[in-house]
Length: 166
Image 1 (tube, rainbow, N blue to C red):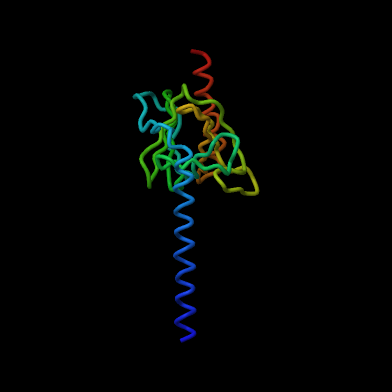
Image 2 (image 1 turned 135 degrees about the vertical axis):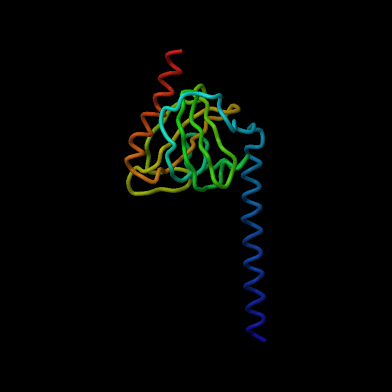
């Protein structure tokens, strides 16, 4: 009898925990409900760099690496590849539709050690800061190869230089 009671209590605790997590995720999504759907593709343009395989870590509000944006699937981590063209950067995600960052929306790009609720010992994350729907966002990627990271950062940064020259 004690075993059955213990199992029932454990099951209730687990179900309650999952319901609270689900509620928290829904509440986080409602904070960014006015964010329009991000672009899925860019106009055809000449490739600058890529595709580079890596992991999409997520998108946060700029300056707050813990405030994940979950609207439109921007908060879900997954395998990805990034291609940089003269029109912008396109992130093909395995678990969600592609995410495109137009060159005109790009504000900054940097390499950092903390992004989208994750931190590591050394800088391994490419952070792309861009503007969409009145929000300034940070999108984080982690290329599989460190050498790709050091080549990808200037390639994305060059988009901002093209934008400034126009």
